[in-house]
Image (cartoon, rainbow, N blue to C red):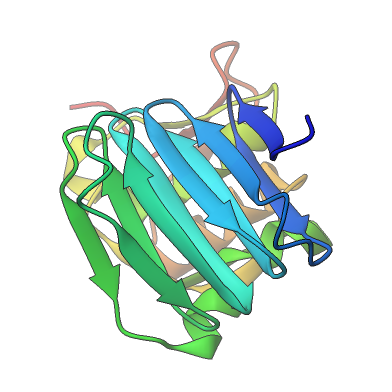
Length: 181
C-alpha cells in the first residue's frame, strides 16, 4: 500500500532482496513474528514455535505482534530465532553459518554437526518420499556434509556408510534408516 510493502509467509522459507524505500518499509508477517527492512537481503523461515531470521545484507528489525516494544535488530551475517511468545535468541554473526542456512537457495542442505533427526526433517521438507529413522537411538548422531535436497536416498546411503546401519530404500513408508527396536 502507500505506507508499507507487506508479505505474508504462510509456510516454509523465503529469501527477500529488498529495494530501499524508507517511506515504504518492507514487512514480512510470519505467523505472529514480524520482520521489517528498508533496503536489505534476508531470509525468514516459519517454524511451529516462531520464525528464524537470517540477514545477508543490511539490517532488519524483528518482533512479535502484540510485543512491539520488544524488538531485535539483526545485522548482516547474523541470525535470530523469534518465538511466538516474544522470546528472542540472537546468534553471533557467523557468515559461514548464514551461508549454510541459505544453502537451500542452491538446492543443497549443508550440515555442520547437525543431528540426524534435524537432517531428516530438512530432507522431508523438500521431498514427497520421506526419510524415516527406524531406530530412535540414531536420532542424536551428528553429521557434516553438503547434500542435494532432492537426493534423500544418497543421504541415507551416506548415513549407512558412516554409521554402519542398515538402510531400506524399498520400504513402502519411505526410506528407513536403521532397524526398528
